[in-house]
Picture (tube, helix red, strand yellow):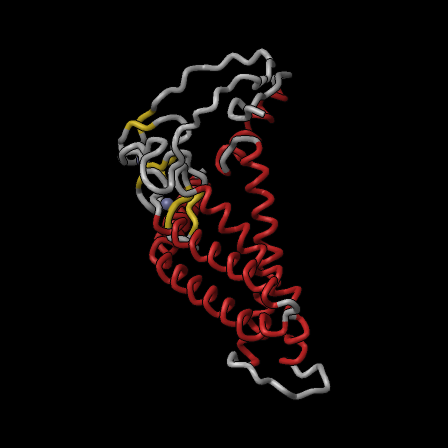
Length: 269
Ligand SMILES: [Zn+2]
Ligand SMILES: [Zn+2]
């Protein structure tokens, strides 16, 4: 019993140490992400883009993808995720929030599964003491409660929540697109850089080693972020966050043991 308590304390200490390290390393991760994106763009536009066919046609989409990548990374880092004590953003307020739709919902057929919806309740956070709405969670790294908390991302040095989730999803989508094109269109230059072709000609500004490392990283990021993006889009399609997806798995098991069915009330599809 005593041993189990020590193990539990040890895990708690490790968890807190992990949170401290993640919080402290956040700005360095953001700096690294900016440098990597800059190196990736420089590699693409100086090594790959000049050899593309129909450059007048293929260059604009490439520039558009790069601009979207940088812009969504900027916004996902700068837009606060939606802290509980912040002022609520209304539709139409600010540049990034769309105006309310003028269209009526006539013709929309809502599902009729006999679900009894309970009224949303507010609870007090045990850590910061603030009253918070349903779906808000406390982030141990930021030390604040976030509305529709998804997770804390070290790569953007803040939480993903209600206000910046769309930039997070779009950033991942453009990251997958850009790394996919870099991997698909830049393989012949990668072979040239590692000396697997007959010509020993490297007339580009980016050093060969930097290009090879960028290319390899690009392939890995493309596969890894594609899996993350699919997982996230699956959650979006079901109306649940990463935290809720984990919770719902537990609720499903409990419901199954009781011979009952768990219904995800956030899924309106
Ligand atoms: Zn809190
Ligand atoms: Zn956080």
